[in-house]
Image (tube, rainbow, N blue to C red; front, side):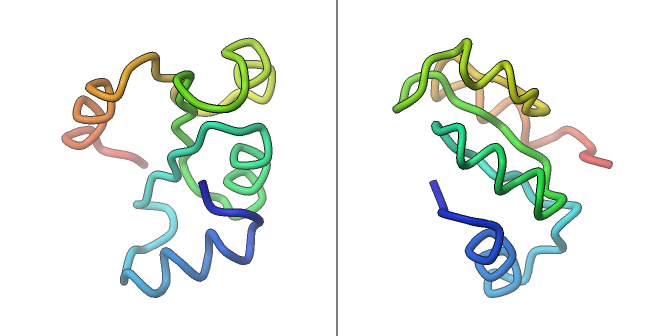
Length: 79
């Protein structure tokens, strides 16, 4: 995932994404912290670096167990 709040906001701005409409996807505790600081919706993924429990403790908006779960987020209204 992206590192830090600056990277999160820079990446969404560069891509032309309105921050409240974007989804930050990451597999580390620091990704969730950065997303919360940036005010971005967070999808934590459990197939990466940190454990499901570690990610869940930081309360990402979504906690996904497999890559296919990402597709289910796309049609949802985020706000």
